[in-house]
Image (cartoon, rainbow, N blue to C red; front, side, top):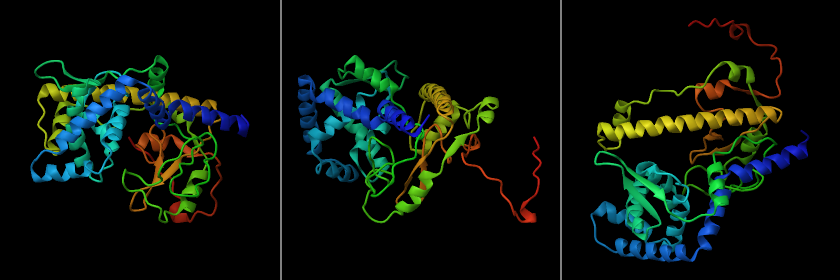
Length: 335
């Protein structure tokens, strides 16, 4: 492929997979639906009444942050997020995914508050919260009406693969390197600023061309880093102050297994896409609030698991000469 063909393909991939484009599509359909406008106003009124109540100190502190927000706009954005849940999704997972839309600095406060908000907004009938049995976990499923085209668009949505062409040069803190959308270059909601974050370093890293080790990918199968067990699910919940029954933990384990299979399938689809397009790609990078640089990539990433790191090489390779003798030792691998 020539450069123009790669650029056109990159734009097509971004339109197909980028969540920012999907949210815009969902937002438009919700805005054009008179019934949803009624539900949004209803939800905002219910939240207003809830916020004006008197509660314990830590909860009042969390709710005071909501008083600064446009509640109708907040409900609208939460409904946009909920529209992604086309099938029953564990309530805890759904709330964790929606929490970032609040913009709170504290992650735990975001999740706790969003859990309460979702329970209140369920009364608008825009979505269902269900339970399969007395021992089962809560699940959330959207009832927001969307066109078949939009539903298919959501189903195609996933984390973006690496860029097939060189990222756009970064000139300010709210650019992404991608061709069709921008984003804050500082990780985590609420951390954005316009101070110096060494854009020259990010540009240098973005320009580094990489490739997949297709021989490695053809001979070694990707496996999860750890086993999915009921005991581990319960132990993880305890660290967050939650006690799970064996049945609840088993549901989480089954969800983890399903998520892993989806992730693995998508990864191999992207491996194949990169290989078919010339096996040359670029990763974009962002910084956290301490200035540490992180490669952006879910299925393909130089800072991922050992497997993810092992399958990536420099696209433009050179023979290294002049290595000091003490570092030029042959390593013997043992099982």
